[in-house]
Length: 471
Image (cartoon, rainbow, N blue to C red; front, side, top):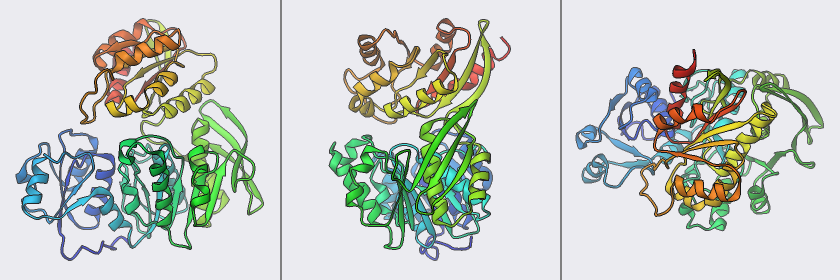
């Protein structure tokens, strides 16, 4: 099946990606390269992802210059690319087709059995779980994921079957371009609200439209426990598969227990009048919901329960999703180190809950980097509330992600808000180097230390390990 080319294959030979190092862009680029296209791309931030693409045979530029696209038949862009980008301007001048990232994903999905995972939180983990179950079932799907699988070290692969598992991005409403056979909605929460004119109704309407892209014989697997999903249930006119902890759902988790970094629970398949036990190699109630979504997809594909159980037991997780980096000794204090991508208040609360359930009665010391000025402004009070639940807090400056600063929206104002609502006294630092110096002063023995955020906060993990591994 891997010779199945998108419809544009006869006319388009060379495709250039502006910002090829992005999680979604790199995955699409890799799949297209393996389909036989010539791929080039530019990214100012060279990373293991761009190095991998270069090793595959893609041409990678570390600058944005109009000469980079001189031979391109099409140019792929994400919504993060500035209209002033010289490559984009050159493509416009040359009348070279400019293709949004999601439109290119839609073309790859067009002739495949698409499984699209949408939702404000949990997309990457859920997509990874579905992929792992399909691989365990030897269905060899194509997949494009917004994170690196710990098991393989990659985020995309061209499979032999006609299954395609991919994330559906609501941040720029581009998920409306996809036409999958099965869809998942993990939850609906207020984020990226400028895309929807700060109108919650427009956000929920977009998710309803997303389900309308399913064929009448498709199905939407969705979390019936989520308040945002509840708001749209009556408006969806496609077959539904519901999941959650509540009674009355199609797929329910009960009898949940945890031992170390593993979760154990029972799954009730209500329509099938079946139940089975699960050992899940991960922590957090939010991750149990992600597994239920993946089970819902697996059941739609008639994958056996024994295969589902085996896959969930062996799942190795996704990079930067509650990554455990072991125990370290800092100033004679032993700590447990974790790293997570969480950058929304509800994600922060879910991560805190997971770690407190794993390390009961231990202090939680958090190093957090807010991501985007607009998100920090829109969810300011919610961030203040969530972060105040830590026992110790270091705040880095806001990671701008190409946004301009907003007056009075910064880590100092966030720290002041936290002080007003709690006894916590956050320490504000300029960068990761300062955070590394401050950390030993605020920890005690047996503390749990968490680096948290979607910017470059993850680059702090290696220095912490290097500096303190043998201390």
